[in-house]
Image 1 (cartoon, rainbow, N blue to C red):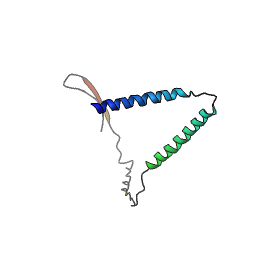
Image 2: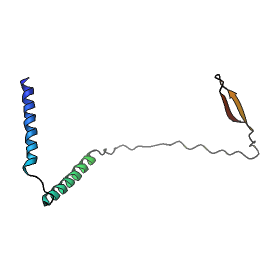
Image 3: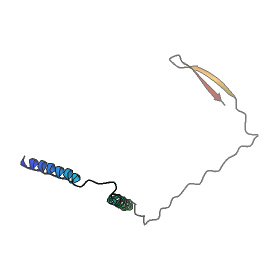
Image 4: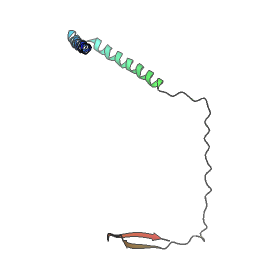
Length: 107
């Protein structure tokens, strides 16, 4: 139990010190230091982001990858003499609950 109390006390002291550090020197908008700090943060973020993006890139494979595709099937066209006009009609039917349904049938 003594270790937990010590850790809580250290965290509390660290929190109070960081809170007081912000009150010591207030920032002014007319300072050139604020602009410089913003620019440094932006440049640092770009450098860090570029380094992280570069590390996430996968390494190229040494092996060759061969993708074989099947040839497309040949197209088959019917002559006009072989095409019969379809006969279409509308069918009505009822399901077991008595609801009326319609469908179009072509043959």
